[in-house]
Image (cartoon, one colour):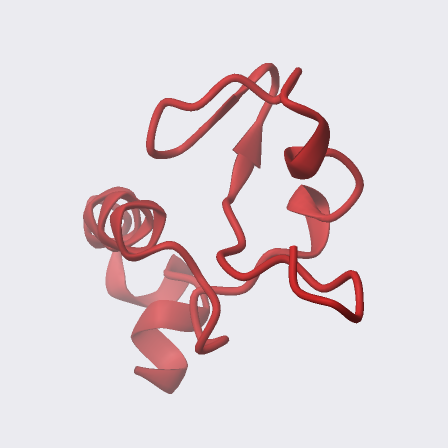
Length: 70
């Protein structure tokens, strides 16, 4: 985290792991995963890539923010 308490890199949390495979039991990963956005400049690039791969599997009309905003 930086001096203001904001994570330097934000990860997408899915149950007990992040999309990039890190355990959420690490203290610095708790509390922000559910508000993660692939559009933030602080988003983990690996989590963003995995999210894009998952999103691409959905029909176009049902895709998430990556398809609409990216």
